[in-house]
Length: 125
Image 1: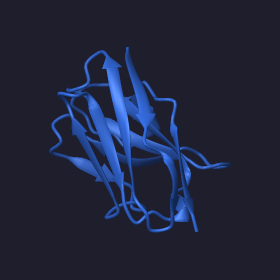
Image 2: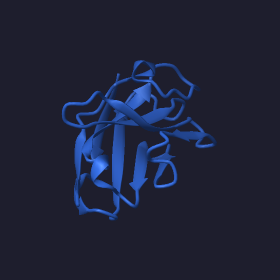
Image 3: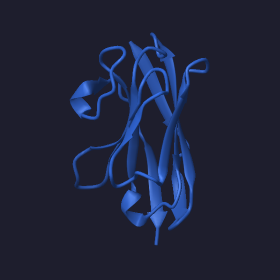
Image 4: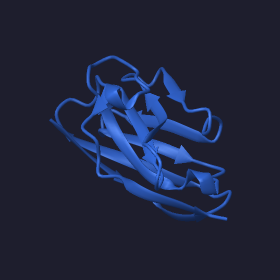
């Protein structure tokens, strides 16, 4: 079992930046893809970005591509999401998760498990 804890959320103005962190403990981190998802009030959880175990491949939702950057540090067991040019529609609770099977790169919620508790990101207009 892997435990994940998100941090770095907060309140920021339209156009601002935040960097989220996801710190892992427990079982293996370095051979699994990791992902970020978000859920806004009244909406379903949606994919934001994922990164493969080696950091060679990353994929993004079209709504965040060019504004968000996902990265990871396997030695430190931490994943990051740098969010720039934030918009009010980015307001949501952001969750990190580890993929179920090693060496993949999923984009669907069902591809992932071991979810963190989430961190709130609020972008004011």
